[in-house]
Image (cartoon, rainbow, N blue to C red; front, side, top):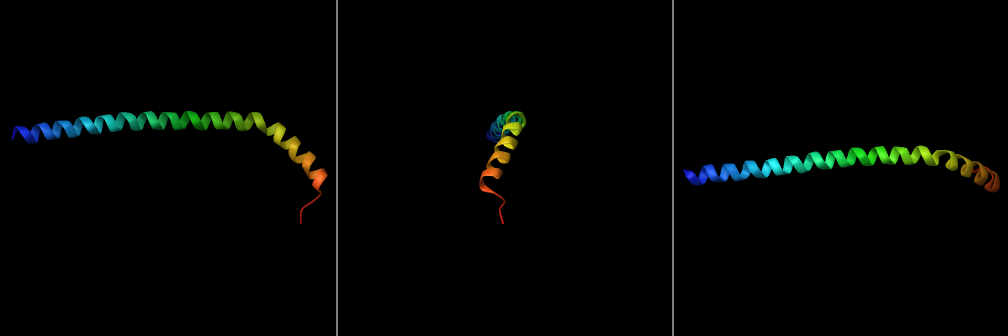
Length: 62
């Protein structure tokens, strides 16, 4: 009977560790998404200018 209790305790501890690491991954993914959005906002003016210049060089597609 004590082995069953020990096994349940070890399994619960493992789940706690997995839950903690899952929260850390979600936080990191959220921060990465924010960083990608900040970078996209910073690059948008240069990208627009680049598209305007390359559009006049290449001409219209189609």
